[in-house]
Length: 67
View 1 (tube, rainbow, N blue to C red):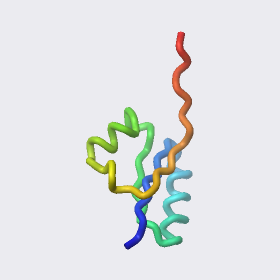
View 2 (cartoon, rainbow, N blue to C red; view 1 turned 180 degrees about the vertical axis):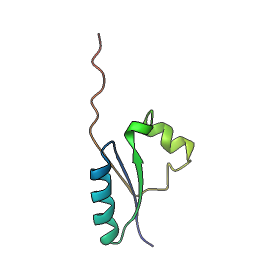
View 3 (tube, rainbow, N blue to C red; view 1 turned 90 degrees about the horizontal axis):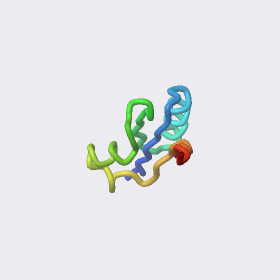
View 4 (spheres, helix red, strand yellow; view 1 turned 120 degrees about the vertical axis):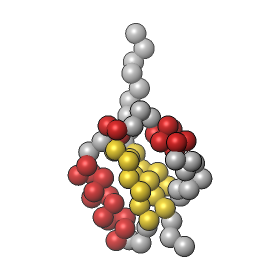
C-alpha cells in the first residue's frame, strides 16, 4: 500500500513539481491550492480526511500580526 501525501500551496508550479516528483517516487498525491481554501483545517474537515494522509506538505504561512 502506497503512502498518501497532501501537498498544499498557492503556487501551481510548485504543487505540480512536487506532485510529479512524489508520484514518480511511488507516493499517492492529493493537492490543494491555498488561494481557494480558507484554512487547511477546513479542507481536512470538509472532506473528512483527517486520518487519510501519511504526510502533509504545506508552505509556512505567517499569521497576521496582532494590532
